[in-house]
Length: 135
Image (cartoon, rainbow, N blue to C red; front, side, top):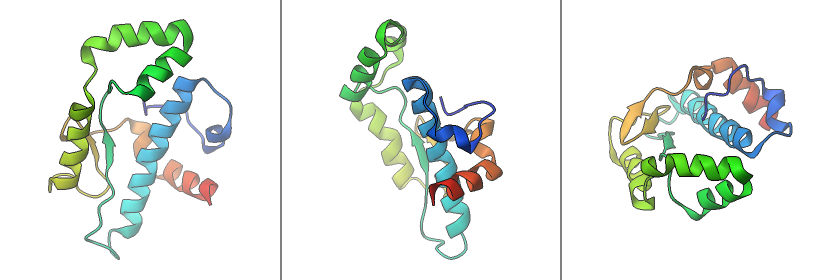
């Protein structure tokens, strides 16, 4: 979901669908982690900033989101049901990111492995622009 195409920072405050807002928030989180890692790398080499995607988790938040998205949310939830993780399974990637030496600062973790985020999430200029907007 973090692969928002043709994104500019001005869009982050604009009104949009709940799913698009969620995708923007995921993208912003990855951009922020990469920016923090870049900024702290030399001055704080023992700190790690890691973006983690726990996967689709069967949580109260995901159930509420599906219900709040109307028929589309209900259909997407039903189609995704075979792939949804329990809360414990979703937490596994977070624990892995905290404990594995493979999860280096600035990395993106999914399914207990370092993964490649969407190209938009690797855009250093977009990360800088987002940081400036957040000030």
